[in-house]
Image (tube, rainbow, N blue to C red; front, side, top):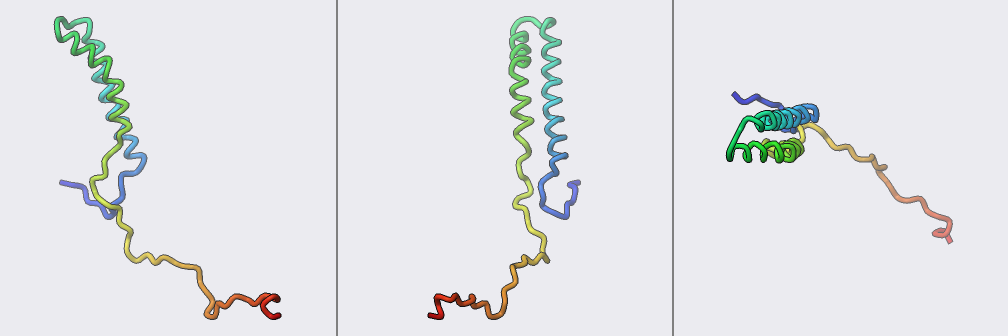
Length: 102
């Protein structure tokens, strides 16, 4: 079941950072497995595992820095908030300058 939310705000920075760290850690874990398997594989598997060990750091950084895509749409402002403006005086005529009196 999808988690309900009372706002349309994106995830908090801490939540987003945690998700990026998890993505990076998983990708780098796969790279470590590729490095560990490299001496034990032969044939075309060796090239596939070596390519994984070489290119996975780049992929890990790209995936971690990509961030999450906005899936909820536009951020909505809660209702009931009134934007206040600077109060103005009822007769806001500018004061006359001495040059105007002459």
